[in-house]
Structures are given as C-alpha cells and as structure tokens.
Amino acid sequence: MMPEETIVAVYDTAAHADAAVRDLEAAHVPTSAISRQPSTTTVGTTQPVREQGFWAGLFGGEPDHDTAVYDRSIESGSHVVTVKVPDEHVAGVTSILERHNPIDIDERATAYSLGTGGTTTTTTRETAGAPTVGARDTTHLGGEQKLQLAEEQLTVGKRLVNRGTTRIRRFVVETPVEENVALHSERVSVERRPVTGDARVTDADFTDKTIEMTETDEEAVVGKTARVKEEVVVRKDVADRVETVRDTVRREDVEITKDGAVETDVGRTGGTTTNSVPPARR
Image 1 (cartoon, rainbow, N blue to C red):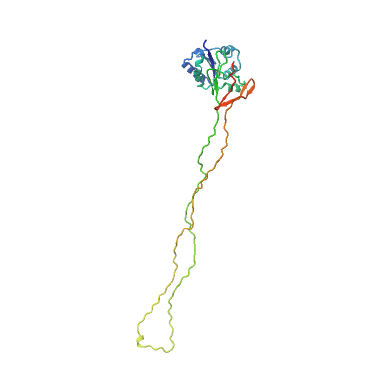
Image 2 (cartoon, rainbow, N blue to C red; image 1 turned 90 degrees about the horizontal axis):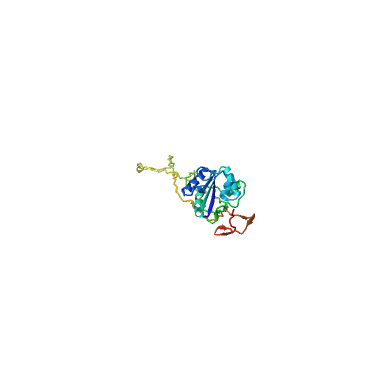
C-alpha cells in the first residue's frame, strides 16, 4: 500500500473552505480523498463530526487534544477540511490549503483554553495524527515543518526640518535734525547832516554824480551727503553633530518543551533556530 498522509485545515468561513475544496478538485485531487466538516453534499463524507468513529477513521485511535480543538471550532461555526494524499502530493495539497487563510491550530487551542497538543505541527502518515496547516508554517514531506521567526531591524534616515526663517529688510527712516549757522547781512543807510565850517565850492563842483552801494545778505544753503555707516552680514553657520537614536525592535524566539521540561540546548546558525528534539507522533 502506498504511504498516505492526512492533512487538516480549519477555516473560519464556509467561503474559504468551499474555495479550498474547489481548488483541490481542480487540481484533480479525488473527491473521495476530501472530507469536510460540517459535511456538505459536495464532499466525500456525511458522518456527523460528533461521532467518535469519524476521527478514528481519519487518524486512528480515540479522539484526543487535536480533535477536541476541531470539535470546538466546528461548534463555533468553523469548517474543517481533511485530505488524504500520497507522499508525493503533500506539498501541492498543502499549498492549495494555505492559499485560503486557514487558522493556526495552536492559537485556536489557546483561545479555547485547551493548551497545545504537541502534534499539531507534525506531518502524519496513514493513521498517525493529522497535521494542521497554519498561516505561518508549512508542512513538508518527511515530517519536517518550518516555524518562521521574524525580527525587526532599526532603519534610521534623515529629513530636513524647517526650524524658522530669518528675514532682513532694509527700509528708510526720516529723522528731524537742526544745526545753527551764522549768517552775515549788509544794509545801506542814507543820512543827511549839515556841514559846519567854511567849505568853499567852485563852479566845477556843480556836476552830476552818482554813488552806488550794494546791500548783501547771507542765507543758509542746505545740502546732504550720504556715506556708509555700517553693514549687516547674513550667513549660515553650519555644524555637524552625532545624535543617538534609541528605540526598540522586536524579534520572535522559541521555547522548546519536552516532557514538561524546557530545552536549553537551542543553537542558531545563520539566524535559523534548530532543535534536536524529534517531532512528536500520535
């Protein structure tokens, strides 16, 4: 008998589950290999999910932690799609299921206060426990599954910030001024006075004669001269400084627990966390 693996995906909406089933059928996955809970007339099984025989038929044995999560999800209105495929088709089927937003089974178990089952991230073979397709992990052939750990990095850039504008405007101010100046004036005065004594006059003195005298006056003449009194120099003083930027960045890490004890032997190589503990089996 060719080895088979059972893959389980849980969807919160019927539309996502329907789309996943349609894509599986379009990829030529046999309808008989697809199960849907709650069941519909378009997929293989019609058994009620509450019957223990349904989970036993899929996984073998009695219902356990994972099936309890599936039951609680269905009771809350979620839809479970299970697919049995040969080993060589696991990657393709898993990729199809992941395209339609399945839930993370561990997160859902925590929300239901059921804890983690320890097998929800393990690829199963034939009647072993079924793996759950999560939003951030991928099931691979051979029982290997990736759990991606994200890490933030601080990126510091530069931008110009306007700290204010300095504007210098030249304008004219008129100021009243005054100054005293001495001015010279000349005036002509005429005075007639009698001559005393014996002054003789000859006939030659009886001629026309004109005397002229000019009056002068000084007046203030105003002139202005301009000179440079001072100058205003505008410049930028440039200074470089080193500023320390402080913030916090987040990263994801893992804690590995085996049989109730926390494993401390976890190494990192090239940013990848590895652990020697083998995947749990049903």
